[in-house]
Length: 275
Image (spheres, rainbow, N blue to C red):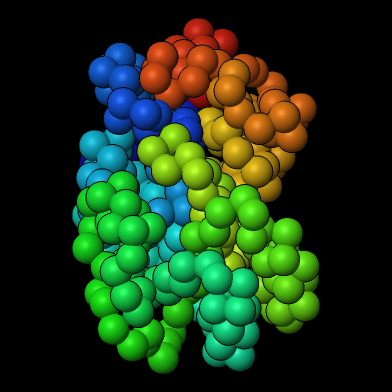
């Protein structure tokens, strides 16, 4: 019986600000990622979004047979939405994060491993976020658990107070991201301590049997930095955060110009046999 070909490498792709810009995904990205897969690579999305709606659709399109990182690293899924790994938040931390968000006037969202998206009421930020995600929130009392991620949707004016308060919550890590489609707010994710896009990438690679040196990542923002630091090839969009650009191995165009395609083409040119 013929053995399956070894995986040449794995390219992880952030969604908001990297794969998706103000005008969705640049058309040139899809054939470039298809060529990468034809050469033995796996491709995975690596996002703060839940594994539902548009994000799961992107995952299924970039690589239906790959493994994908959702919820800022708290969940690893297959392209069909099957959860293969999930890291829940401590119950006490969930309560503290919700209370802090309420105290500073942030919009509070909570997420479950299976992609459940919950909010207590549908305000303008929730409505805009539903449109961005392609997922309707479940409105009403927040679930008791298990919760993989609490998220604060907050304007820049309230961010300093939120940042100070977050430092006092025990057993969690904080991840700050933005979306070109909702530029007026920060999406601040709260996960269990040690959970990040880096831990999600490591978990996906372990399940695939691929060493970290044969992984690449394309990202743009602060919450991508943990994963960008650990992979063999780190690509950052030209309009990315200065802190992310400072650690980039390669700089590619932003999402509206299809920079993910440039990353795929650079990988194929520089590493024809894989990383």
